[in-house]
Amino acid sequence: MLKDKFFEAIREYSLIEPGDKIVVAVSGGADSVALLNLLHTYKDDLQISLQVAHLNHLLRKGEAELDARYVESLSQRLGVPSAIEAVDVQAYANANGLSLEHAAREVRYAFLDKVAKETGANKIAVGHTADDNIETFLMRLLRGAGLKGLCGIPVRRGKVIRPLIKIWRKNIEDYVGNLKLVPRRDHTNYESKYLRNRVRLKLVPQLKIYNLNIKEIILQTILLLTDDKQYIEDKAEQALQRCSLETSENRLAIDLDKLNKQEGPIQSHIIRLAIENIKGDLTNLSYVHIRSILDSLNKTEKWELHLPDGIYIAGDQGNLSISRQRPLQLKKVEYTYTLPIPGEIEIKEAGKILRASLLNEVNIGLINKAPASQAFVDYAFLSKNLVVRSRREGDKLVPLGMTDGKKLQDLLVDEKIPADLRDLIPIIECRGAIVWVAGVRLDERAKVTKNTKKVVKLELI
Image 1 (cartoon, rainbow, N blue to C red):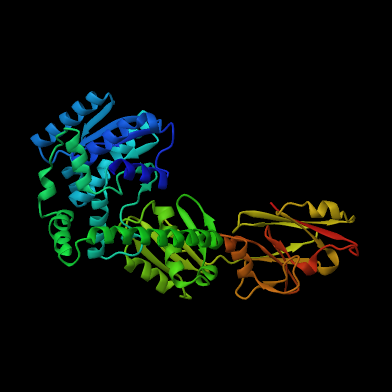
Image 2 (cartoon, rainbow, N blue to C red):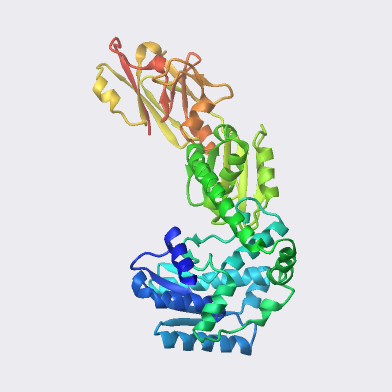
């Protein structure tokens, strides 16, 4: 039974592949001892190699030392190499303003990741069980959580895998007992000051009064919610790709018009996914934060929100920006120059030079291969001098290849030009009509045709 559930989880969630090297987190308790023994027993069948990792949190003094010795002895008996270290978790919690549980989790996974890197392991196996999953579900329900939170503990996340996630703690204790092993007991698992302990020792027994199968029912609910979450997240991922204007390690920009066309539930998932892409996780992010962002999407003026852990959200001119750096308070950049034909001017505000050259020959092949920094214009469409200026409210043009006019703002958004660069793009104008949005798009009416006699070459340098 236990073996079947173990392999069922591995197959269903593709947790282990032949050739994997796995760091096994072993505290010395029944769950982690069972995990190590199962992986060791079937390591040849799975074609894997193992590395034990044990962290002393320095919270239980002498008991913690005995835990470390037990894990070391068990590893030696199985012939599995072990890495054992100690970290003062209480000091880490105090220094970083974290709860003891949160601090222990951060320190533990940092240690496991370090061992994986040092040993060349590509997976980290931890001993979370079906009981841990329903306890997590109930804890999050009590605190308040959305769909993602109510899906419980993920079976895998990055390198971390949980092969025991479908197995009940009682079955694990029976398995360990049959092996004649005596795992370590952590007395803190019975202290009522921790919410997880109160849920396990008090809430779950109370729920059993109403339904003896409550644990199985909750587990089934978690699995159903997980399927729904995966479907919605896949849709949100696709929608985020369609809405993204700019993506980098520390900043992500989203087209607000496209975002607003998405259905309400998908909008919130897109925003959460975008924040997770920049932040790395959704820790400390609540429903209130997402609601505040959604309520701000249709504001016409600039707006800015500060999220936990140094994440900034800003809305401006059709863009939603998510970044690790506070958005600059941009000043409107305005400039106007006159460009003679032929001639050259320096646009100091944009740090660019614009040159106009008069050509007597028309080479359509050359024109079609021109880079974005060059434009070829029918001289007959122009006057002796061109106006070179910054963009203005209400600017329109007929983009090359189109028959209808388009707002310059919409063109810049479609071309994914960052908001902080748009005022720096030179607009070349003649007799009140836009000729060229420099480096972006030529106006259809100014293009060179077979009837063109003279050509003006514009270069942005």
